[in-house]
Length: 170
Image (cartoon, rainbow, N blue to C red; front, side, top):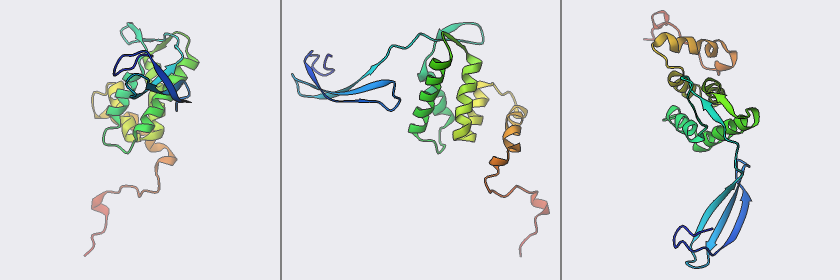
């Protein structure tokens, strides 16, 4: 391994462990020439899975695109970087496990949305609005209806009532 600092090809492995996603090995190395330390990741070369876009174009699956979409959807939401990385890893594992060589972009979006719905419903609606190309407020309402009907989504919060029917305190 070449040192990223001095480019010498003389290092030693200080620490080696499986990374959090369990698909790669993290190695901490020390250059024997300049004595600086750096980290490398070994990863099994994955099959080349292609995403079939809506217009029929096929492009390589890129987990970074999923990460960027999730970051935008979760902006200013109580979703940690670790949760986003975990979702990206879970989506990636599901794709490499369940699909041989190609996946339709619609199916890929559904996989991401199902993971996101479990983490944060507001981020889910944000992601869905871009992914499904909402055109007006009715598209939002249609997407929200199943979530609003779900009994687990009441969360102990009081239901909204019409403010005109509320008694006024004096």
